Image (cartoon, rainbow, N blue to C red; front, side):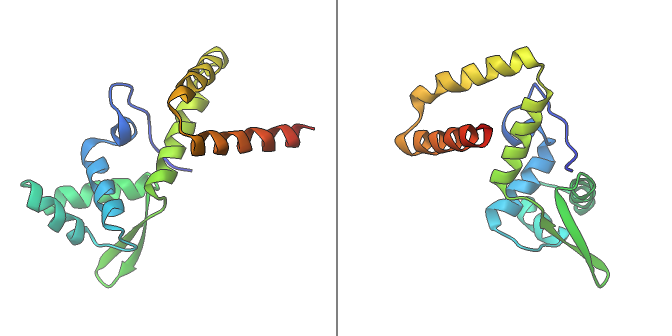
Length: 140
């Protein structure tokens, strides 16, 4: 559904998005915009750095092409909206990485996740326990 590649040399959002794409999505998610124009994003980014409107417009168009943003015509301009929340995007990115692993690496990845549970709080452990119980019941 969504079109992105994982960049092994990057972390966080930048593992799936180029730097400016990640910056734009952080602005959109951080501002909680349901709809926005390119000018809205440009106004925010231009307070932080010298950036051309056309650069922002091209990058927003790329995010639309990757299906991370929806758009609709509003007169002579487009209005955009995020197709996913930040959390939904991170989950999709995680699934993409996990699904691309060979079977042996998936087992190692699961083992690593179990080891990381030492750092988990009670709420996280309860949530994981509920997921495991649901899966067991589905298999019966």
